[in-house]
Length: 129
Image 1: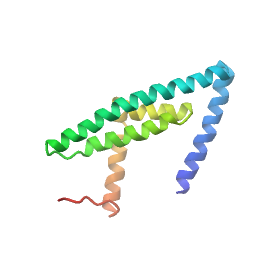
Image 2: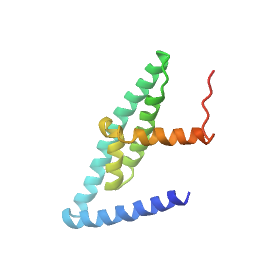
Image 3: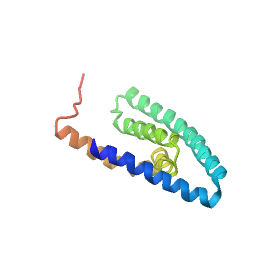
Image 4: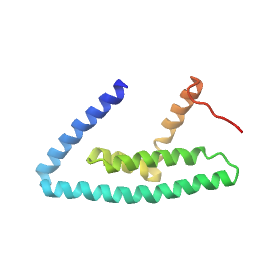
């Protein structure tokens, strides 16, 4: 919990610093337009990728395949979409990385490792019916 709080505070401070630097270089109005533009584009991309990911999950289940990889994609796209809605350049960069398929692949091993760790500790259960 302390790590999460520290991460949020650090992110806010870094975003403020980046706003100041970008605002000085391109102006306040242009900075606000850029933030709005990246948010709108990001939401559009996240929606498009999210719908496709949910469809992939449905197809996997319809073919009696485990939907695990599609669920991870859907989760990462959801988190990326949230980050894109938040104002800021750092959060937009991370959000785009989670939404775009070829950069999203970079995060998957960390998610799988985290899930394996939770399963080994008995904190995550998989129920078979």
